[in-house]
Image (cartoon, rainbow, N blue to C red; front, side):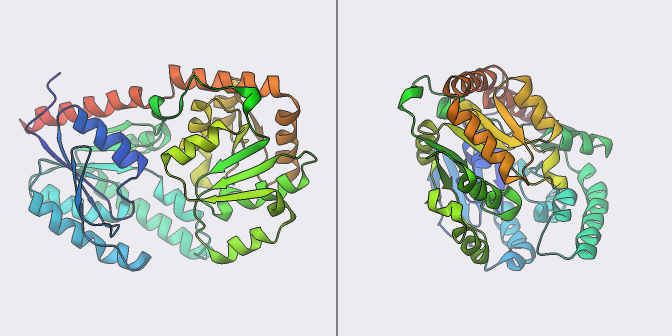
Length: 377
């Protein structure tokens, strides 16, 4: 395959950091490894530089959510125009307007839909109900008008892909499955694991953190809960720390990729019990597949799609994410049945090696870029 060595590609984000797993570790690194000239524009305040052969341009950190939405896109656009690339790959909804401007300049533009934003807005706790509904509807109309103008939509799930296909967009799904080489180790020694379960990810109420801390408090075993991530709200953090279950919780803070791998390898199960919000029901949370890759049985929300994956591969248990007693029972079952837990962990790891891995998704991304390269030529 012609890898497009002369084709200059720029990925743009105003909301994510330069080390974002989907944007940098997977998409940018994959494209660069196949010969594309890849740059990344970010606004994380860490300065410009280069890593893994990818030039990183920092346009400055935003002072808050409003500044990021209103002003950061113009800073990103200024740098994007200066770089004069052939293909621009956008990663945030607030960058859609600058994507339209780049299209008018004759550029190829790809929008990467990480989330279904209209659905996501319906679950925002800091917005009142009428405002949530109004914003969701308004952005849905804007999406329907703007996104068909782009050359392609890269969707993080099949559900999001199908939504854009219905809007007459050229859309593919590039699922956020794990890198095999990162977590899928063969050195899993179950008897050496510690008496602990783990959650790694965003620390917000909607992620089910309150319920899992309550669940570990209800657990009759000596099992501890390891939590890795960053709290988005001080009040929520204080509420958690007042719970009885916090005495059996070890807060690890933000973890780099090696830190994540280490805590997964020493744990008996991984938790991903997100609340049943519209944006989560059809999501494919990367943490679920990372737990599977690391050979951990998964305790997850009982959403139909997730049940199909976990029960279909016999690699986890599904529970009501709003019921701490159910979560506690699932933890207790895996702790008291280590052979079952080990078997589920093995099944999950095998499923990732066979079908839920980045190598397969990478090929979809490269095929798309090859077609865009042909279009450019």
